[in-house]
Image (tube, rainbow, N blue to C red):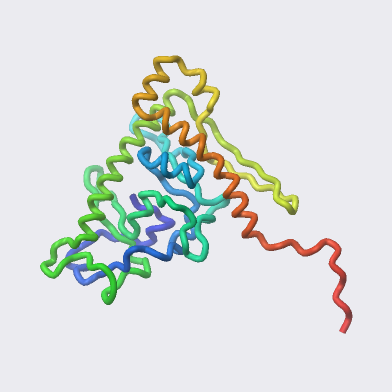
Amino acid sequence: MIIPLLHRKPVPVDLKEHRALKLALPVTDWSVAADLNSCFIAAIEFVDAARDYPIFFVRTGNDDDGKAAIAPIAVFGLQPKQNLFLEQGRWRADYMPASLRGYPMCLGRMDAENFAVCFDSAWSGVGTDDGVPMFDADGKPGEVLQNARAQLEALEGETQRTRVLCRRLRDLDLLRPMRFDATLPDGSKLSVDGFLTVDNEKVQALDAATTHELLKSGLLGLIYAHFVSLGHMRKLLDWHLQRQPAAAPADAPAAPAA
C-alpha cells in the first residue's frame, strides 16, 4: 500500500524508464519517516508489534456494505506528524511493521482489479551509481524487485484477512472511542483521540459460543495482544517529554546590567 507521508512520489516500476536504477538497500536512515505518526499493521503482525508499539484501530471510510471500515494501526507519536520512534535517523524498536519494512517499494492500485509494484522516486537512496539494481543485465527483474513483489503481494493477502477480522470486531460492537489525556510538567494538557480500542467489558460479556468462535479464528488472541500493547502509551509519553525544551527556572535572577 502507498503511505502518503512516507512514499512521497510513488511511481510504477517500468523497465524502459528504470532499467539503470539502483537502490541503496538496506535502508539505514529512516528520517524519511519523520512525519509518520502511525501505520497499518496486519493481523499476523500483532504479537510482534505489541512488544514495541501501542496498537489501536481507526475508521477508514466505508466497506462495500456501507458500514464503517476498520483498520489496526501501530502508533508512533502523540501528535500529528510526530514519530517518536526516530532518533537521529535510527529506528528505536526491534520490530519494523511490514508496510514500512519494504520501503522504498510499495503496491499501488491501478484499478479495481490490478496492482503495480511502485517505488518512492523521491527517496535519496534511488540513483544510478551505487546500490542494488532493480533489473539485471538482461532487463529481467532483479532479486530485489522479485523479493519486493512477493512480500508486497503477501502483505496484500494479509491485509484482506485483517479486514475480515476487523469487520467481525465491528459487527460484534466490541470497539469504543479512545481518549488519552496527560498533564505535562508545565501544567499544559496533552490529549490524544480519534482512535478506537476494544472494550474489555464487552469481551468479557460474550457468550461461550462467540468466545470459542473468536478463539478459533485467532481474533481473541489479537484482542489480548492489543490490550498488552496499550502499556506502550506511557513510553510514548516519556519520549514526548524528553523532546520538550527544558523550562527556565521560575526564580532565575536577572542578568546584571552591563
